[in-house]
Amino acid sequence: MANSTCSPLDNACRCTNAAYNAQVSQSTRNITAGICGVEPYVDHSAKGIFIAFTALTTIFVGLRFLARQARNVHVWWDDVMSFVGVASVIALLGIMMNLYEIGMGSDMWSIKHENITRIFLLMWVAMFLYGVARTVSRVSIMLFYFRIFENTPGRRLRIAVLVLDVLSCSALILLVLFPCRPISHFWDRWDGEHEGTCLDFYGEAVGIGIKDIIVDVIIITLPLPWISKLNLNRKKKIMSCILFSVGLCVIIVSAGRIAVVDKFVHSTNPTGKSLHDDP
Image (cartoon, rainbow, N blue to C red; front, top):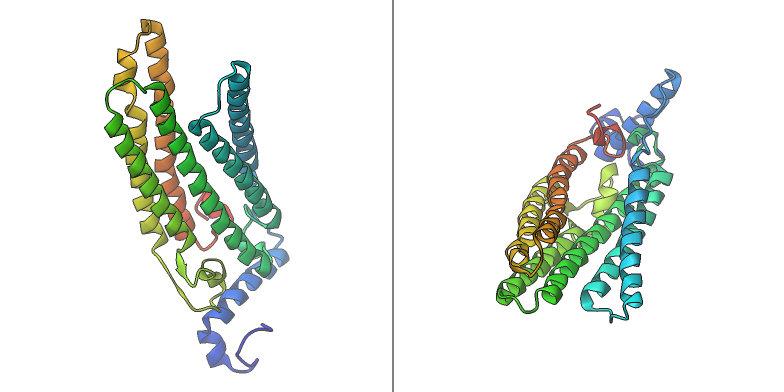
């Protein structure tokens, strides 16, 4: 390797140099696969899911603002937070599309070394945007509760849940922004050439996942007692409860995210097949 500190004839150095072996193993596997006619694994099926989710989110929030304008109702803070959330999701989609362009979804050994570093850098940015989107989305929901349940009891409880959510999500964003020391070690440690330390990503993901599930359950179930007391007919009450209960899907996604992170953290092929099936 051109950047190796080992001389071509120094076998002892080459056999023990982590940086040298990290890059040689990737290059060797790429060459071997080419000779044997093995095509690298490529799966971009998730792109459609990202695009569809972003499009639906943008449409729903756009309709929300149009409805406000049509009814001549002033935009409130929950609307502002929903707009920030959509902006974060759109930015996240742009990052994900860029990731797929430079190799995400392909076997790691088939990706150019400089692109691997860029992939991990963009993943760091994507995790930050994801944290922002989740935070402002939850805040928007809580502010929505404040607006529609203004004259119902439980205001202190709603304030407590909002503060808990903001603090926990802020802690999540800080963990995402500073997972390693130095920060750049998150995206350049894969080659073994850089020194630094990182947090236990799997332990961190499990902790965050459990926290997310607990907070989601609280936020989803929080309005149900107040809905039952609203002056609505039985059909509307049932529809309202069903609408809020749709949030249970978010809890399922949070639980599934832990399994995906487990595969990613413990895989030798984090950009490719390991995210879908064990190689």
